[in-house]
Image 1: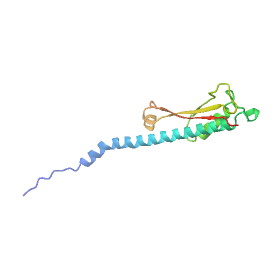
Image 2: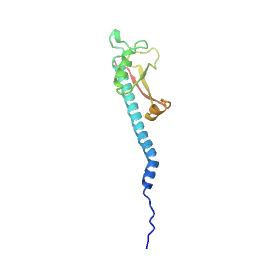
Image 3: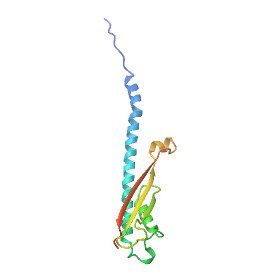
Image 4: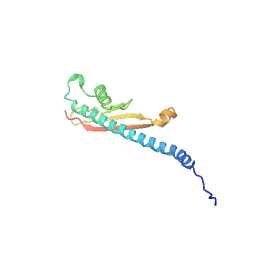
Length: 142
């Protein structure tokens, strides 16, 4: 008596080859989302550090470091040095109370950077990108 046995030698390889691209896409997407969240948190921290620098070195600062629209280089440097691992950070310093740079006036610092997912960067010349932002608004204390 001869048995007929169904052969399924190659089905596991076929199933694996069909699922591998989907699995790799999910892993790469999870990695990119994690990187984007980390960079946005870093931008928020850097903006807070810049705003903190601005409120501590406010109206009571020495004449060479007085705050104002024409002298925000120190704030920008503080933000860019605090944004470790985030390339090309653009910093905007704004004093919402126009013409007010003394104690009790507000200062806001906004840090932005462009995030490009790995798949877009490696395979599509960076066509897809997202602008990440971190900002802070505080009152000058000194």
